[in-house]
Length: 261
Image 1 (cartoon, rainbow, N blue to C red):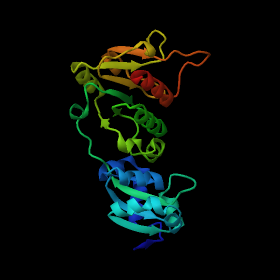
Image 2: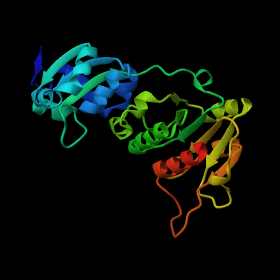
Image 3: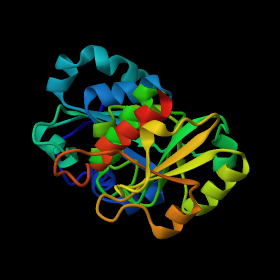
Image 4: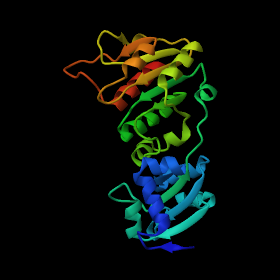
């Protein structure tokens, strides 16, 4: 097995580019995962692992988690501790990294269950929010995640915050959220726009009888006017005290709970 000790090794440079650049991920169709648990989860969930990088210390500490990764990885490389820091997005890397192939996404019309409950994220910029929403969505039994604009779902911070959820739950990527919402409405689904506006309907009072799509907007500016106007109903979370808004991931979790309870 080849051991890599140079930070300028071509395979390391390619993997580091996937860590730093959304363009590199998009053009190559690859992404980088970090951490023994997350890489193990990818291996067990059928994600194609192109390359595995691991340190000697990681091989000893995480031997059980590495076993299914070794079985799935097309190529395997031991790396030095110094090299591991070039591939890491954390201050204390575990020393386990996988270059994976991005999953092919089906068209929204094919993937969506018209009786399902979906959370749509419009222009979410913080990858940690994206990951946290996907984790809550999986835990609450949401049918799928719709992502329109904003950060890349294969962003390392998003994947780490998701704890594997972004690799397991259905994710629809769309460049035209209004078109998807129109399609959803035509199929009889309820479309909901979340807003801090106190004049909107209390989300606790919304009882969808069939499928529904609930939209959460950008952390700073919220949902775009075009999307807001397309949705059938504006909903809000009543707030007490002096708070006028919530973190996007927190708001999404509460909205999803109300949608599925």
